[in-house]
Image 1 (cartoon, helix red, strand yellow):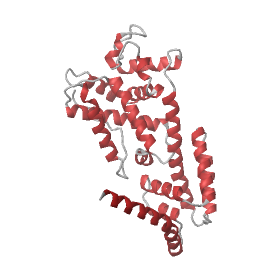
Image 2 (spheres, helix red, strand yellow):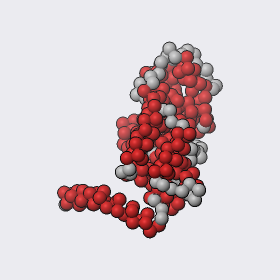
Image 3 (cartoon, one colour):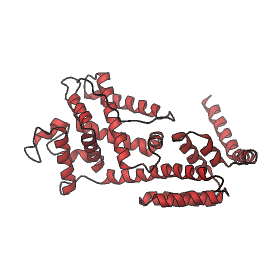
Image 4 (spheres, helix red, strand yellow):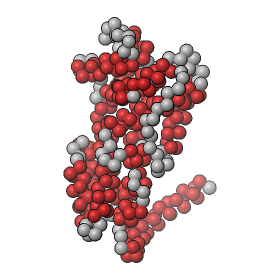
Length: 314
């Protein structure tokens, strides 16, 4: 049965590949609009429209469009993409498609907006990866300053006795020197935690207090670094596109990624408390359950994770 389904799927994909140009040609002849125009005019603003534009561009067999996309991808990897280039790339595609810009000015603006989201997301992936690969260094004054800010934001009434101290374990680090815990996610793990602590201070302190529950407690900082890993995975796999495409019509930035992280951390904490785990051995099970829930939500084309935190009793 599985073999039959697999064969049918292969046949369908092959037919679709060969028939798609014909279908597009027929629709253009009847509607007087190319596929990109039909998407931009017919789909709702946000992920539905942007994903449609992205798919159409990826499926394009026009060499000039493929070349344009390849070059734009290279600019993302270099982390040098800007709005001016996106405008130029969109204009190039409009020109290739022979679309009258005077008649379809709205289309040109919409296409530019979609391309800004598409390649902004790809550049964000590159930015996040650079931060993930940057190791925390106690020799770096900027890293040290941010680590101390994290402590101050979370426990302002309890000054550190020293840079290396067991006090760090009270906010969920494994030992007396937090830098060893950032090995997996690099400086990105610290940046995420610091953003949560400084931008959503009440929520972060609330989660910290819940993590110190005598029965259902957990290591706040270590959990936070694990959430960073989850956020990175969702970003790289493309499953987070729906959220980011709905979150902003401009270039997604690290600020947007940090907000995405904050939503995940707070929501993970809520599920942890609901599950009432017997011990930390249940971490993997709950993490997998939470990730599955997030992925399911991200299948909704209207998905947008907002940081509207409701603080309940510990």
